[in-house]
Each structure stands twice: as structure tokens, then as C-alpha cells.
Length: 254
Ligand code: DC
Image 1 (cartoon, rainbow, N blue to C red):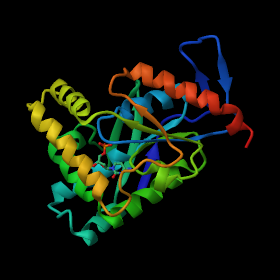
Image 2 (image 1 turned 60 degrees about the vertical axis):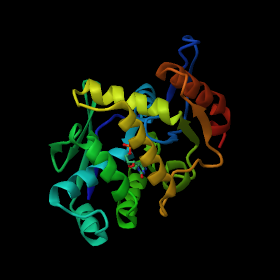
Image 3 (image 1 turned 135 degrees about the vertical axis):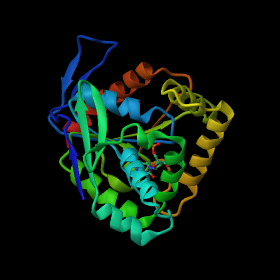
């Protein structure tokens, strides 16, 4: 299995929008973890944060989604541990950033759209409960992020993948609001969806993510909780940057 992230690394420079003249440079390449349920805004925010900091952005959900997509195409049952483990062995995932757009390539194919359908979303929750899949993907995530200068987005980053991450965020929002956001997203892509059904699917995925035996969704004790229900993306981003900035002397002093 091979994973390439073609984003750019670099020292974290935190620009706070509310005080544009203030610029702080960190000497250390941080590991920033962003966990939380689906639809809380993690993807948009981790992309924005990584772009602002010149860090790599690792969308771990896209990795689980890619395995689910390949399993679906190959007709592999989500309970077939052995076949899924085999699938992970031959897998090549690339994150490519081009003209500000992030794309996911699996074995050279652009699957950015295909991994976001409601069917693949439901199958992903099942595939992500499979220990051999988690073991393979967590190993990759650690290798990619160990030297720092990364924002990792997922469910178990602060608890399992990088418990030593310098900054951990847990992003939440009400299930209804998250369902509404997902609905708007799917509609914008031209997919025919029903709002109540989308909210139900969000709740179902929450239950599956929280109840699973391996690496269930839960907040790390030292994670900072941000509830985005009534906040815009920009407001959450400003809050995250403020927190990173606030922690800066402690982090740099390590
Ligand atoms: O973040 P997302 O909606 O793209 O995640 C898709 C699925 O993958 C979701 O069911 C949770 C699961 N997932 C996981 O179990 N662990 C991660 N680190 C990331 C995602």
C-alpha cells in the first residue's frame, strides 16, 4: 500500500484574520488533529487550516471511503475481513492538490466524486469497523504524519492515531444541522436527496461510529470542543487559529 500527499509542507504561520497585522511563526512542525462526527465541517476546516499553515492535509475519511468503494466494486462483503485486508495491501491512495482543489486518486483513478455517494457513505461505516482495515490505514496515517506539519481529519486521530498531537480539536454540531449541511452538499452535486432521509443517515452513521468496538468516535480528554451549529466556517477557522496562537508559547517551549 502506498499513500502520497502532494500538498506542500512548511512552517506554520498563523494569521489571525481579526488582527491581520499579527503574524506568528512556529519553529515546530505540529501535528493538528481534528476529530468529530460527520457533517460537523471537519473537511472544509482542515483544508482551510492546512492551506493557511502550508501543512499537509490528510483526510482519513477519504481513505476509509476509498476502501469501501473498491470493496463495493469488487463485490466484497463488509464482514469479509480477509478479502478487505487483501484489498488494503494492493491499494495506492494519493491526495493531490491542484489549483486549490483537493482530489483523491485510488490506483491512479480520480474517485473524489465516487466516494461521496450515500451508498458508499453507509458502506464506509461498516468497512471502517473492520480491524484489519483500521490497522492498515492507521499505519499509513502515522507514517505520513509522524514528522509533523500536518492536519489530520477523522474520528480517532486524537485518541488512537496521534494521541501525542500538539493540538486536538473536536468539532461538533447538532445532528439536524449536520444533516441539513450534507443535504445541501449532495443537492449542489445534482444528486436527488430527501432532507429527512439525509438527517436519518447522519444519525445512523453517528450510531455506527460511536458503537463500534474498534476506535469508536469519542473525544480525546485533552481535545478542545468547538460546536459549529451556529457558527460559519470562517468563524470556526478564526477560533481554531486563535487557539493555536494562544498555545504557541507552550508548544514552542517543548
Ligand atoms: O469523515 P467522513 O464522513 O468522510 O468519514 C467516512 C466514514 O469513515 C465514517 O463512517 C467514519 C469513518 N472514519 C473512521 O472510522 N475513522 C476515521 N479516522 C475517519 C473516518
